[in-house]
Length: 435
Image (tube, rainbow, N blue to C red; front, top):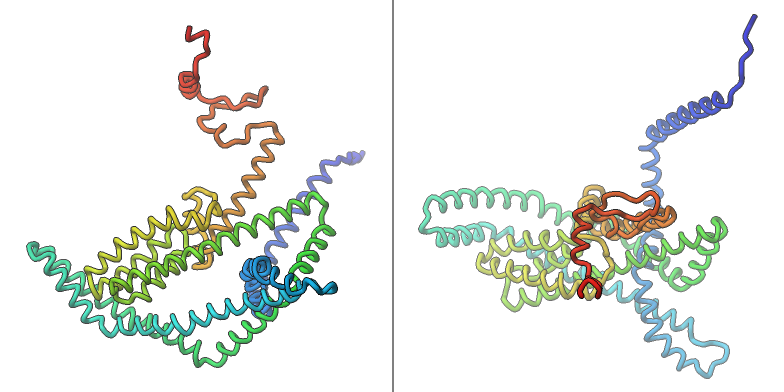
């Protein structure tokens, strides 16, 4: 007699689980197979939308300046000018003038960078290459005078210097100058790059003007869409997260740009006063690399000192001492005054975020890795804190230092015996014990 099959829900559960696993594996394989084509499509889309991306970036960078000008300069002026006009309070005129001044400031900075700094940088590098033989001889004479009483060390140092000089001259002549010449050529005579750059900049400026002029409408539209897609609680969390991300990025980027500009300017003034070789070149290097936290001062000081060393070893030593003092002043006075607590994470995580960002995205990863990591770190920390509070567990980090275990009944942190004894010794005695 044939046995009747006994239906059990667990068979359905395991069947659906197996089907889900197989379907996910197939989907994952298809994604991997089409990943190159998807990357090309996204790249093409980004290229098409690059003028609008430029516009969004320009808008994001100019928004604080526009609001500052509107709030403190043109807003009060237009209120006084339009105080007798009952139909118009001058808000549109104040907004338009604020946008105009902000865009002019941006264009002035770009013009200064292109027409003032780049040609001088190129001429400095070209002069450095042409005089490389003389610089090598200067360094060799300086080393010989320094190590005159140590002939063996002097001979070894001269050998090393000759090898470094040959390699450096070959690298600069075969790599740096052709690449720099090609870049300058593309910027000045390359029709395609010039046209595309001008096109992207013009469209980006137009997009930024339109968005800045209607920033309240764009913000309201984004909020309206957010609250239509999510519940009020979820929308509020997303809004708070976006606001925190904006504060972190804007504070970090603006603060670092201002800090680096000040450091570069101070460096240039000092180098000009002491007649340092290639003052503008080394000042630009120090200022640009100072944007990168933690590693920036080292990245800027080493090549700058080496450039000066080839021309004047004594001034290279003076420059190294000056950079050390300058970075101490920046790290303890200028930087904290400008940046405040915009980073808010330990130095270990700063170093970790820079190394990870540089490995994944190069220079932009080094620059933006810190604020991105700050946002992720803060969100994870808030999530951990909320889950601990929900479970009625200690949520302060100090509670988990020297932790032995968590009492399952009281839900309190119990520290190790040695730590309890130390705390008991440091506790003040009451009045009865003292008597």
